[in-house]
Structures are given as C-alpha cells and as structure tokens.
Amino acid sequence: MKTKARVLKKQEGQLSLAGGFFGTAQFGLSGDRQSLMVADQSYKKISNIRLDEMKLEIEAVRSRQKENSKLCETLKEEYKKKQKLITEQSGSNLRARSAKQKELRKKFKIKEKEISNCRV
Image (tube, rainbow, N blue to C red; front, side, top):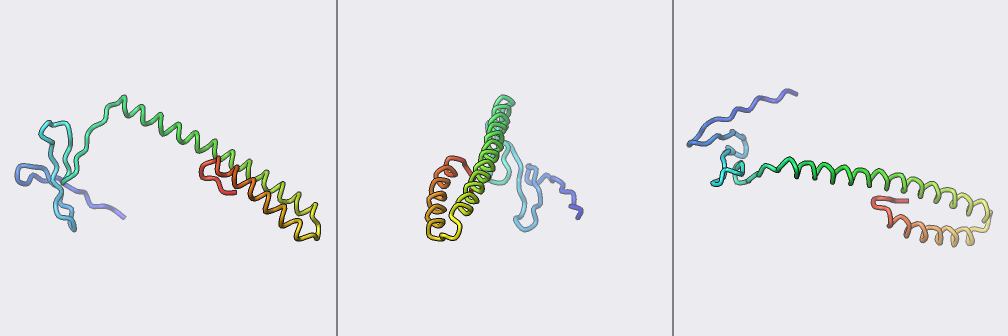
C-alpha cells in the first residue's frame, strides 16, 4: 500500500501539516529556539554524547537479555532431566512421584525468579 506524500504548508506564519481526523498539526520553535514544537508537544535535540550513552545502555540490556535467555534454557533443560529422573525412579508410586515433583517445582520456582523473564 502506497502512502500519500504529506506536504508542510505555511498557515498563520507557521508550518503545519494537515492531519485529517485530528485537524492540522502546527510546527514551530520554542521561545528559546531549542525545542521543536509539534502541536502541543515539545521535542528537544539530544547531544551526540547522550545518544552514545543511550546506545551503550541499550546494548547492555540486550546483552543481559541474551545471557538470561541462555541461563533460562539451561534451567529448563535441568528441570526436564530431573523431572524425567523422578518419573523413572518413582515407577507406579503416584503419591511419591507427585510429592517429589511438587518439591522440584518449588526449588525451580525460586531459581526461575532469579532470572528475569524466565518461565520453567
């Protein structure tokens, strides 16, 4: 689907954009000429130093997320192995298996809380 080009027009001494349903959005500079004003919102330019800091922060978060994902996968595998072991050892004793599985779930719930966004 092609979008129609939008053209800024000068109205009442200011640039504006016809927005259709919402009317027109006027563009301008603040009194100190440091902020762009669009309708009733203001936007300030951030410095290149701050931009670089933000990029580093984002990269650090992504790195933590990847690490947490790996830790969570390892935890899931460990849980599956222990779950299988309980099933094999308990045999037909359902009551013993259920109690051991409940205890295992408790232990792994504690471990999963230490890793953000991890569900075992």
